[in-house]
Image (cartoon, rainbow, N blue to C red):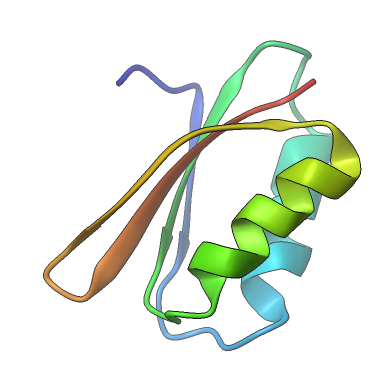
Length: 75
């Protein structure tokens, strides 16, 4: 998937992946896509909740090799 910006939250525990994702999205324009990489399994539920609360769109999430990959489109 194409993305405009990438943020690696590997090694960070809740709530840092969400806090840093919010900050990364703040610098982006509407419609742009942020790729987030996390190792905290709680991020799966947290990213969906964050998208629901903020109106941003969680385009996809997947897991590979202990890393969780998210693609979020800024509203």
